[in-house]
Amino acid sequence: MQRFSISLVSVLLGISLVTAAVEQSDANVADAKVANAKVVITRSERCSNLSRQFDEALETHATATQVTAAKALQRKGNRFCANRKQAQGIRMLANALKLLGVTPIDPVQ
Image 1 (cartoon, rainbow, N blue to C red):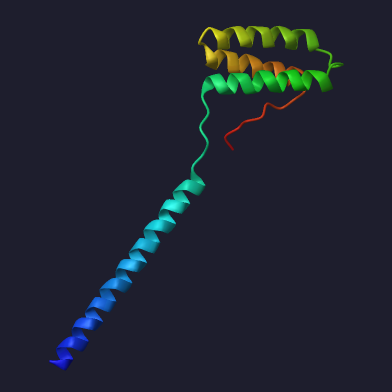
Image 2: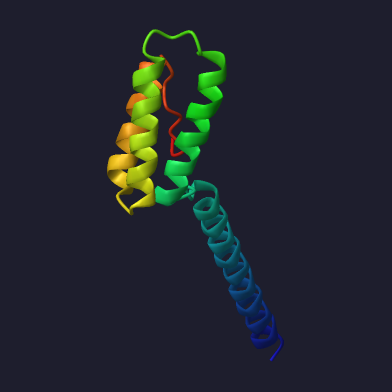
């Protein structure tokens, strides 16, 4: 009877150790997924970010040779963004920034 009790305790201890290891492994996988998750922004947010970046770049690059063309592209890009054509607006705003000599900041890197 004593051997049976020792065996039973050993089996239960083994099961609890395996269960604890599996739970720890699941927790590590969940933590890794959260750490690897990328922040997804909408196209509207991207339009706003690029327009804000353009305004900031305009202050520091006001003497660029193509400021007038860049401002025109910004206005056109903002109109596209406002009319639910964000993809075209994003391209226009990015091109406006490039005319100022600024690299558009890509939030998903």
